[in-house]
Image (cartoon, rainbow, N blue to C red; front, side):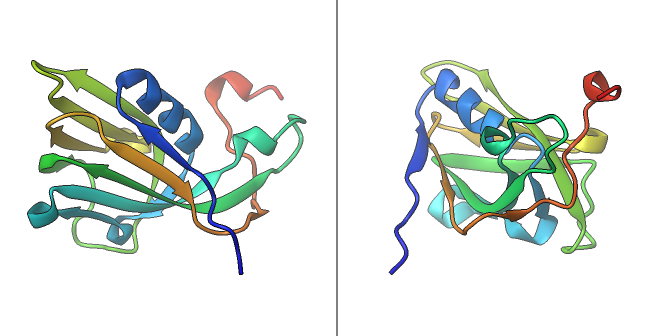
Length: 149
């Protein structure tokens, strides 16, 4: 029987930035990103690049299937994302929290190409968990500041 990977929990902005770093360059199908209004939950499945395993700049690295969910979600809106193609792939760049009063605020999932999902939340309540074993990545994600490597 396979052991379940430990989860990363976020209850404040500092915790959320750790999850954001773990998910940098993760890819997902739009159909795998779902808002469940009755449950006040947003959930997504990502192929996460395991930056923590990439010691050498020339290493292609590994990917792993990871699940992310947010509880206490009061609403969700998307910007510049295709709603007509559930198989369209998006690349997550960062997750950001914009606070309001009493712990509430907006969580923004920011994607390459300018797309975004904005979640209106009661508070930060997020969980990230790896759900599969790793597999070799096709390529290491490249950023503008790494072009010469």
